[in-house]
Image 1 (tube, rainbow, N blue to C red):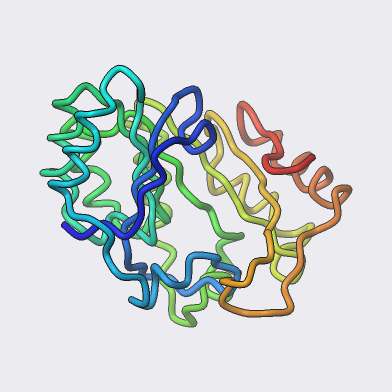
Image 2 (cartoon, one colour):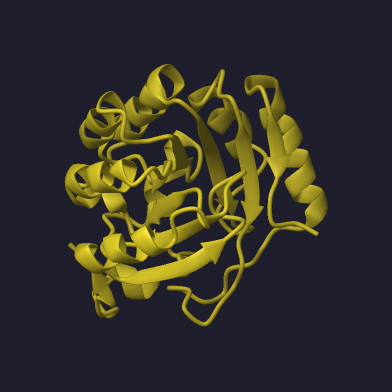
Length: 229
């Protein structure tokens, strides 16, 4: 399996763990605020393969205590063989996903290959297509993935990257209804970078983030801002 990036040490990507982050290329969304565009459109060249990754992980046993798999969208690939080998080395695994492949997510959960799942919830259902850059987007798989995590994941979070031009006061009660009963939910502001797909997007003001967080709180057990000073 081609691997497009490896952050050898992170204290942020896997909550409560000293981890590495593995980046896999390819995505089935086209979010205008994405800052990993090179992973989506094929510009990024693979940096290593799964054999090299496993050799690296063997050298870090006792130093790292987790592996975060992100993208792009990792579930575009059959991850089971790689995750089986990572778990055999004793590492807990965190997966980042956009929720578009519930059948693959279910299979990994049922096989016991995921310890933590972070799922992006892009927007209210009626604004999902606009937010992910796909006019005919089907929200059904997103609902299925949410239900799977609520029922089957050992641990999980939902999170929304908030863009001033894409989110408003109406969005967050609808997001709350979509993930009702969730263990934890985070709002994180959009960060502009040179690699962002579209220009002209902005982070919301702090007071907007706090107001929107308050709108979601009644629906979930824990809600917080992330990436805000």
